[in-house]
Image (tube, one colour):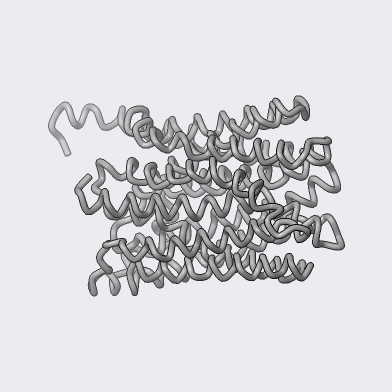
Length: 404
């Protein structure tokens, strides 16, 4: 990568690490806080669900705003929402307000709606050859989150005792505040006047491309399935007599599974092809479901959640890379926005249903719910791979004879 691109990628990776550390901390604690504050315990995952709804609804205006004002200004606005959301959430726990905690999580969701575009900002700044590596490296910032998020949760849980978990949300606010400072050093140029005015092809035309369809399916199902299982995991572990430290440990390893492969996922895509990496991701999700259905020991939760993280990584980075094949520069803002709107629509639905499934039907129901969607993305990736292989075979005689 060129020095300027490398510098931007490093800063974006650091901001990704901060955002995902806050997210990992919330994943470890939010359902338990919701259960503590809510009168109806089936609403325990509602704050996380609202966070993902806010993320979904923010993706389109965030992308369009950054097309107009540039990445640095847009990312700064998002990080300010995150700092405010963390502060409001911590005060809500002090006050015992479930609605206030929901509001704070919603604002954090707005911040995440902006932060989703860190990976796209890195990809857009890189050349085609290094695009998947740029995406992977930014996502690798989540390795810090995997290690530090659950540890910060354990460290800060009793910081303002007897008000449990207040310190966790204060840490979230501080992480977003640091991101605000770092983002001032991003040097991605604002879009030109021509780029701001041009819209490219209609979305309907772009969305009919097989690469777009499979990329969006991979992102929606990969992220949605992961969210459904992951959000319910702390509740399921507590219900099966595991303590908070055990749940934090499992989520920590899950987050490592999500982000540690990012150091080499880009190279795997370059070597084996994006569709093969996505297929491996779907296979890992199937393995996760099988292990979860086999029992509820600490070892089974751990193995399943690591597989869940690995599967998410391959599907999410693979889908993001595949999506970049479906648009031209003038179309990137609206296509990226539509993709993330659909992906986080699936995540929001998963988060809303996760707590209800776990509380009313149990852990097995949570896992059975993702079987059909995961098989769908598996067959979709196989279909596109076969389609491309057939097209390559048809094209070989033309290339051999020099015909266009």
